[in-house]
View 1 (cartoon, rainbow, N blue to C red):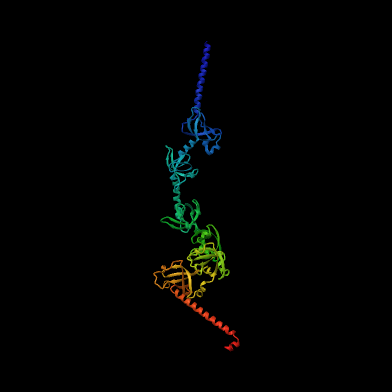
View 2 (cartoon, rainbow, N blue to C red):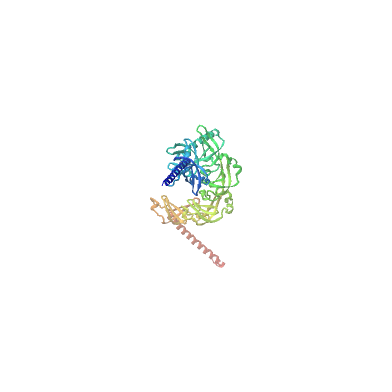
Length: 575
């Protein structure tokens, strides 16, 4: 029994001794691991890599796992033994693993290096209320008013862009950072402004960037100072709007036309860099030369044709056609048309060139007289009717005028439309051709003889006529004695008795009889009388009676003479 007791005691002593060794081992193990505090940044080493994460040893009693996504663009470089800084966040009681973060370690290093007024580089990542979010290693706020020198309407277009910024507010405790890009741009602008003003002088060619476009020109940033490039100084040619030749952001060379140092105003010119094309216009476009160009503008009075950049000529509406009456140039030309014309005149001093379009073709008026000499009978359509006559188509583009006075010898025509309408085919006689004034005169009444040539013989004074009343006036009655031929019965020749007014004696349409008093062939007037009609009738009856008597006496004498001629000599002797 004693022996067994001793054996048990020995085992107890061995256990106790072993237990003490275990405690010493644990203490030794604990002493070999770092004493880490949450929030501390330590070195970590990759001991294992998986497709989407790495196992990291930080010298603690257990490892931690970090997603590869936290390494960003360096994820492909990460492999076993890769060392980097990590933030110790504590131990996960459930898994026994430590919680580690590379991203937070990087951010903490950034925060430790930040201070107000510092210049940092960052990338704009998103649009937020009031401005933009910028990644400078940590998230920072860029107010909209601090993005550029001028307000930016579309902030979204800057997302993804990388710029330098200045920290204007920093609160590490709250984790707030406010940035400004505008401050840096203003500093740079001021620096460039000083350099620009030192070197700026009239007549100098400088480089600039188109900053803004308006209807009247463009503002050019010369480096800290803006100059105005007026639309009239952009090109020797026609510019409808600055956007036709410039765009915001374009780099261009311009000439300093005027510089006001006190007001710091600069006038610029773009066209002045090249020679003025009008200086050689007279040599390039001599009078009589055929030239080609593009129609760039149409007005009521003509068309402007660009012969070369900066040089335009005017085709006046009167120089567009030999024969057509062009009411507006758009009836013949359109903007953009390529046309050929003839140089008529050049005034380089006043920057004017007169062009002719009709001169490309021969003038039909030069040969119209040979083709249709005076006296030629033509046939054509009525093209137009006016108060003073009708226009008849004679030849291509040439119309002849039949004046209202040449429509009829005898008819009273108040308006040509009483007799003709457009499209009627008529015959006429060529009366006159005025080549200089381009006038072609025709006559229709000249196709027949003038009835007034025989009027004096057919209506001698004393001739009794019948006709229809065509008009009654205060001074007399007009009586048509044949178609188109009228005579006037003056109020004094109406009756032997006194009458108050011709209108009480006759009405239009009444048939009357009168006697011819006189005929004025020059003025084409016939004087008639009713008052002398009875006297003329009596005279006519007497004349008729006397004529009959004379005719009877003449017949008796002729009978006696005939009888005497038939007598024989014996009968004469017996008598």
